[in-house]
Length: 99
Image 1 (cartoon, one colour):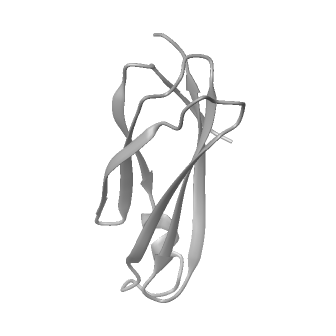
Image 2 (spheres, rainbow, N blue to C red):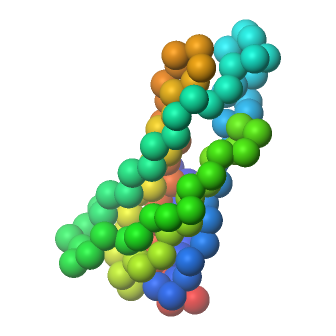
């Protein structure tokens, strides 16, 4: 699974490009209907990072994450449902380290 480093003081967005998935459905008119974000600590964590500012523009979804704990690892997942009823997830691992 891909991973990204995030600084404990960072407030940055993490995008997913869904355009190849949307184009693979056989219809160029398939678009994202709903986009849900889930963040899960992979280790014992005293607090959950804050997710805010989600957006979906032209098949690219993203969300801002802040407030991670130094030394913790999190799994960030984006679940979409398309207008044609397809559902899929994309995830990355966030490693919280001072940079």
